Each structure stands twice: as structure tokens, then as C-alpha cells.
Image (cartoon, rainbow, N blue to C red; front, side, top):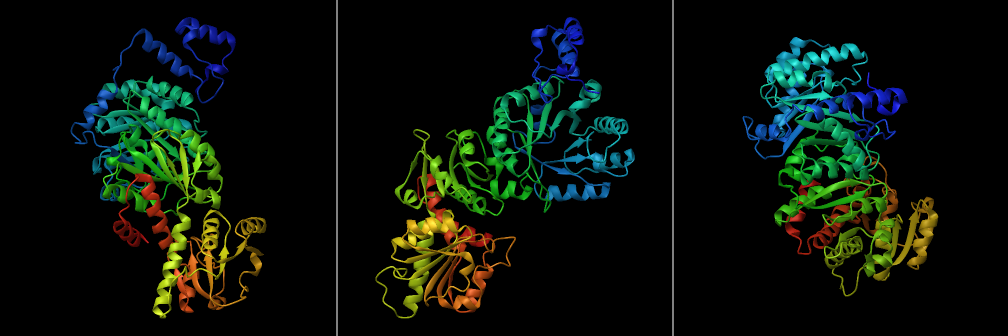
Length: 582
């Protein structure tokens, strides 16, 4: 049973301090996560009076990396294997090897029923270096005593078989670590702590790592839940300042950057998910190797990303990362699931976080977060791009949505007019009725862009007040969303969907019925997942010219890339990448 220092009576505290160590060396924080545990105090006191372990644990792992496994200074990519049977684990191990994993974490506590002989066969059959772990607090282990006995059997067996890494729960570490270290040959000992409540400041996380390090482990590991993406920042601080090898995993979609950006801050190991087994907070193994190429990420890598909520649908990483490599630019572009953009920009305020694509729902609120906003974005009242000026760190806001959408629509209409033999002297948008669905960031960009080209703008939005506000700004008209489908005052209109209607997973939805699309000359859909939405498919079926959200995506991304790199964007290459991915 673990007892926290802050839970002791005053008398017991005095006895402990008098017999073990000076009181000034014990910190009482009144925080159950950080309070120094009695076991830690006892071991710490012993180490102070009679140090006996290697004072430089990192020498173990560095020798391992340059030793028989041949890793050298390469980033290690690991995946966790959770299966009930040995055969399933072996198959998963083979798949992990195919997908580029350097090692696997074998969660022995997931095997059911438990037979030590099966574990032994599994470890002898491993085709990759392995971390052997047995969680005391896993769902399968409800009876603590039995769980502890099984755990000890597994750890001792792993040491006996010279498995590359053996992971011990912090709760058990002082009971067994001396024994395992004395018996091991080449195995490296990881002591881990799984913190469900999260660790939201670098001081608390630092204190926790000091506790873990006091066990004498070769490597320390923390797995923690995160409520917000900003909760990951302490992990980066610890990785940068730690004197021993550290593995940090932030669990959940908001923790994804703990793995994608870990190598920039000195992580020697990251985790990825296997195959189609999506795990919140873990990038797929294949994307680590093929999309992000984390082996190339270093301390000088500039960080870019898409700030959105949700963010999983974004194709930005599939485009910008290959483009950076094509241009030999040391940058990485990652998904950033952000709830509060102001707080996100405050926490990640260093120059290395160099630029962001801004997605829903942050395009309007991001304006107030910028130190400067260019004139077009200011008039629109929305930014889709923020760049950090390297000379002074100030955030500059831009809007590349407007030009991307309007030029795509103009080009499609011009092509239609030319094919009909018409003379094209002015913008083909001029004078047309421009029916806009959605009054968010992208909708605002189109509304201002259409107005600047001489269109008459009519806005439909679920929130009618937002539609009215935007209509006033562009001298247009706002109508209730319920009237959209039947709206048909004239022929030759332009329909632009800038709402989420039709986006995955709701691909069966469409803002306007097929029959009523006949009144339009052109239909534009900002949704690009899927590429061919129901709206676009039905527009083509009735003979209407269409512009896909993919074309808008390409054009706005080209504009963003130029701002990110302060240079030319490889347009042909980026188009090729996008069309291959969609």
C-alpha cells in the first residue's frame, strides 16, 4: 500500500524525518500526484547516505543504442501490442515490422488466460526488439495480489530471456528493481507512471520524474491524460531538460503532438498505432515513416500546423510535409486540436512555432490573437493563416481563403464562357446573384470576395443573426436557412457551400436538392472530405459547372506555403500530391 507524506500524522512525520533524512529535504505539496511517497523518501534517504547505483543512467541506453540492436542515434519508433493470445501478438509483431516499427511494447497483462509458458514462447518468438510490460492496474487485473505475482513472474522471465527493455510500474519499482538489475545482462529497465488525472505544469511533472529517477531506472516513462493541447507543453520542457532518457506519452487526440514533436525536444522514442487500429494521441506507424518522417526532425525544425476543432479530417499534413522536403525546408506540419486559440498561442509562443493554418471554429476569433492583420483579412474579419515574424516574434494574420475561392470560381466560369464563345472582359462573377451557405470564416471570405467582384450576395446560415451581420458588412441580404432549397428568384446564380453540410461522416447531406440546382450556373463546395460531395455529384448530373473544395484547398495552401517559407511554392508538385491523396 502506498502512503503519501501529506497523509501522515505529525508524530509519524517527525519519526520519519528524524530517522531518515532532514525535514528540509522533504517537500509537502498537498497534491496526491506529487506528494513524496514514503517509499520514495526511504529510498531517497538510502541513496543519499549510501549511493550504489550508476549515477549516469543514460550511459546504459546509449550503449544499447550503439550496441547489438544497431540503432545507434536513430529515433526509435514503438507500437503497443495488446492481444489475448500469443498467436495474435506474433501476427501483430510481424505487421508492426512491415509498417516500420523499430520495437514493440508487449502488454502481457492483456493475454487471457494467463500462462507463463505462453509468455515464454512469445518472448522467444519475437521478431523485433521488445519492451515487456505488465500493468498492475489494467482492466483485466482486478485482484491486486494475484496481479502483482503474475507481474513479478513476467518481469523475471523477461530478464532471464534478455529481453531488450523491461517496464516496471512505479508502484512496484522498489520491490523488484534491485533484483532485476543484479540479474540482467543487457536488458534496460524502464520505470513508468500512468497519471490519469494529467500533469498540467512543468514543476509537477518535473517532481514526478525526479521520483521516478530516484528508483535508479535506466529510462523513465510517463503516460498522462491531457484535457487541452496546452497540457503537452510541460512534457516538451522535461524532454529538453532531462539528464536521463525519458519517454513521454500524452493520451488523447489533444496529446498527438507529444509524439509528432517529441524528437524536436530530444525524445529518443515515440509511439505509433498499428495498421487501422486508431488510438487517440498516437499517429499511425505508416504516417510516422511516410508523412512526417520523424527521423528528420531535430532541434532546428520549425513547427507549423493546422489549428482546428475537429482536426482529424485535415489533409494539410499530407501536403505541407512533402512540400517542405521537396524544397529542403526544415519544417514539420502537424494537426493541432485546439479548444482555446488564445491560450494555445500564449503557451506555444516561441519562434520555433512559426506558422499556423487556422480552421473552424477559430478563423474569426484568431483575428484578436494577432499583433498585426493584413488589410484584406481585417476587412473580412477572419484569418486562415498566422505567421510568426522571426525578427520580433509578432503574429501576423492573413486570409488566403478569399483569393483561393474567388479565383477558382472565376476560372471555372471563364472556361465555361469561352467554350460558349462568349467574350470575357470583366469578372464573370460581376452582376450575378451569389448564394452563400455559411457565415463562418470561409463564408466571410467568399462574401467579401464576391462583393469585391460586383456580385449581389445572399447569405443563408443556421444562426440567422450571424447571417444578418455578414449581410450588412457586404451590403447583401440574409435569409432563413429554411428557405434555401426553394430559393430561385432567377437563373444563372452561383451557389457556394461554406458550411459543414456534406462533410464526412455526414456525406448523405446536401444543402440544396438536385432538382433545384438547375437554377445555378456554378456550384462551389468548400467541403473536400469527401472530394466529390453529394452536392457536387448532383450538380454535375443536372449539367451545372462545379468547383471542388479540393481546388480551393490547393490554392489557399499555396498561399499559406509562400507565407510560411517566405518563398515560392512548388505548385506543380503540390497539385500532384493533393490529387494523389484525395
